[in-house]
Length: 218
Image 1 (cartoon, rainbow, N blue to C red):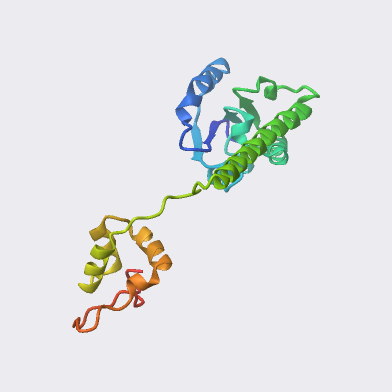
Image 2: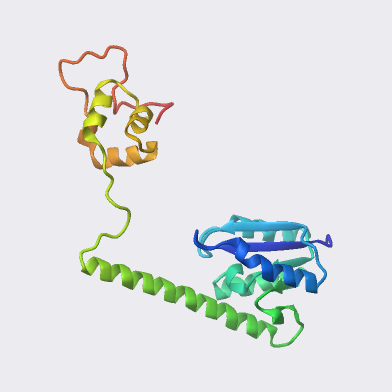
C-alpha cells in the first residue's frame, strides 16, 4: 500500500462551498503533519450516485493510499449502514480515517464502532427531517394554491411561427427566440400544435419541415 494521504470532500447543494471546510482540514493536516497527495471532490446528494466516492473506495481497495481525511461523517455519507460498511471496510484494508469533526474516529477504542453507528444514525435522521420539512412545505404551498416547481415557460409564439415558416431548424428557432434547444424540445412536447407543417400556400422546396425526424439535429 502506498503511503499517501487523500482527502474526500462533498457538498450537497449549490449553496454550500467546499472552501468552508478548508480551515478545519488544514488544522487537522498540520496537527498530524500530513500532506494531501490527492483530493476527491464532488457536489451531489449523499443518496444519489457519488462517482468520486466510488473511485476513492476503488483506489483504497487497490492500495492507492494509507490515510483518508474527511471533514465530517455527514459529508462522508448520511446512511448509517453505508457509513458503517465503508468505514469498516477501510479499517480492514488498514487505512487510517481522520475526521475534522469526529476526533474519536482515529482511535482504537472498543466503543469506536458504537460511536460510528450513533453519529451516522444522527446524520441519517437529520436528512430524514429535512426531507419531511421539505415535503410538508410543498404540501402547504399547494394547499395555498401556489405553484411548485419551475415557472411556466413563456414563448414568443408569433416569432416561433415566423421562424418555423421560414424553414428554420429547431436549434435555429431556439437561438432565434432566446431559449435553449432542450427547453424548446420540452415546449414542443407540451405544445405539439405549435410545430405543425407550415401554412398552405407557402412553398418550401428542399427545406426540411419542422417535426420531421432528423439524425444530426435531434
